[in-house]
Image (cartoon, rainbow, N blue to C red; front, side):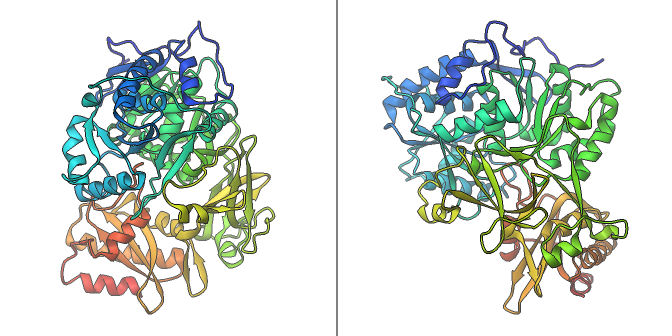
Length: 591
């Protein structure tokens, strides 16, 4: 059997000399100081599946403390440091050096999936300005990008990871329990990115809840991840949580996963990972590539947690993955749906490990009419039936409520706005008092999500701000997107539906990324997409078939509905439809 193992030894799964400790640490440095007494750590894989670097927690502690003394000599305590969060030892060392030096790291995305160079430069400029950062730090290969983003006359120092190590040293004072931890810019940020403040108390409370109550870590656990470290699920879930629980983690760059999805599963198989996580699209992408897996080359029988989060959980994606990889020993009971957001550090709720995914089949006609998630029956037609996944109960010490428009809590199956409270919640957005004020209703945080309770578990149905209202009818964009994705010639995961108001009332616009097609095929796909939307939403739509690779993704690799809408309103989508066909197709799309 072919394996990915090479001459470089990974950090071990368990450390016989260090007992597993799932207590609540007061600070991240307290957690690292304990983890550094063992042998576990980070392992970094390249596109070929080879380990190119290891970073035991003991080495991380040593290097981070050393770098902290140089940072303390260069920056005032409490200064914000914007750091390009590549999947590398350099980023993690810098992040923890900030903790030991009393500096606030603000992880920034890599220049991928953000709409090209201009989009990346704008994103970085806004993030650095929002954080009022004293420096922007990244790999040497991106130094010119950072300089271009900030402008040559900027007062912000642009430094690469190697240059950061130079200079004088002084004593460094680590963050205390009542201080900041980081500023996290959410992937959903648009023209004015909002920096979520993570405090030592909120971050450690969430890490404690994740490791002890959500994942229920055990001595034999090992993690594997391709999630980006500039996203909350990657940073908190698979950089900080494994360290917090003294477990080793095998890391793959997000871009490498996109190019070779099965690399993720090969690493899990060969190095014995028991815990991994992904949004639904990661499982779906892997399932589509499953035919390329070598017989006997992948063994997923040791995977006890295949977490699902970061976007709405799609039961179809989970079923496809479970069926595709059942021959590898994968058990569908390993799926662990959960709910969370950056404003809650990461996790809010988990289902129970080892239990089957619970899918609630809902009659969407009744749902859209009444706001009640009535169960579908044998008489419900397939096109108006939709499955929603139950996402578990709140972590201990936390609470979730679903409220109606009058602010009163709703009963089971009544759909409303989701509010949360607990020790993991952010105190607000950095340098944005107005957004912070809108975030809270008393001690409860307004998530902006919609959902309902069923048997004590929360069910997420969508974002309130994404709701499309046409002639008084509520239409969820996900219903349209998922229907259009099934049309031949449209890329799965490449559809965005939204509404625009052109002065004559709201209308639906659907932008779908097409595959490489002939002129005749394009016109046919255009007609089929328009018919599908009419059937799924009961309303006409303007249809744009966008060129391959022209959609806009978030920092975590998901389609950004908000940014696609911005691009559409700016007239930046070129359908490349033949001149004779374009008016005809557009007319049919509006019928």
